[in-house]
Amino acid sequence: MFDNNNNFIKNTDINKNGGGSVPFYITSPVGRGRYLVEHRFLWEQFFRDPKMLIGNLLVPGGIFFIFEKLMFSVGRIHCPYRMENFRISLMDICDPNNIIAMLEMPYPDLVPLCYRIYLLHDKKYTRFMYFTVERGQNGAFLCRWDENGVHYNYGMINTAEWNAQNRDFQSYLEAQVITNIFNGVGKKPEARSLPCGN
Image 1 (tube, rainbow, N blue to C red):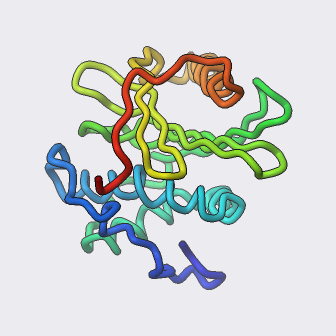
Image 2 (image 1 turned 180 degrees about the vertical axis):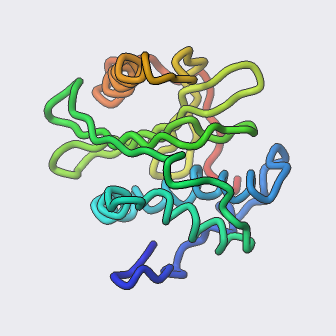
């Protein structure tokens, strides 16, 4: 992550991709860098120290700054995005006992980059879930990474692309689905993959 002087802390395993090779569908340096930030680094940091990660993300420009630094550290990739391409919101609209940090990402040009990432935890920081709304070949999918690096696919989601008029309503719908899964009353995953690197 970053220390108090905004220096990148080099103890993360972002380049190793869980010990495995880079997924075959990552076809560009920007796509690879973005994949590693969305699906590895943020996930790893969320389960390692959720308070620190969310605190860093909430700093004005924090998510952009993290993306810029990490993409450069992955492979000297210049971040093609701008600060206004990212947005973070804290939500407790569906369940007052849980907090959702919703990260809105730049438009995902490649599969399986993210439209959004949801960091969900209870107010005591004892339970955590990391959700992604990922671009697929024929639509978008709601997915989750658990603390062991297992990827769960909950199926297609029809709220992937937002506009200014429907943003609040669509974010509420997604937050409700995610909160239900977190509370054990939501839909079950349609597919599951082995932990990273297996």
